[in-house]
Amino acid sequence: MSKKKSIMLLLISVLLLIFGGYAFFIDPIIGIIGILCGLWSLFLAILGLRGKGLFKDPKE
Image (tube, rainbow, N blue to C red; front, side, top):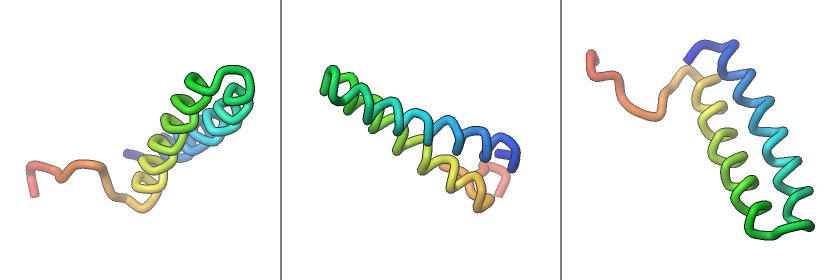
């Protein structure tokens, strides 16, 4: 994943965490789903910024 895409994913994950936290007070099930999606995308964005992917490259 390129650095630009990783930064964009990082911004999206932060927004997911914020909106998931807000939605948690309205509907806890939807809020928890939003927070979990935000945490997962944050994890992927950090891996992308470090230059690693989630899966190994089959060419290596």
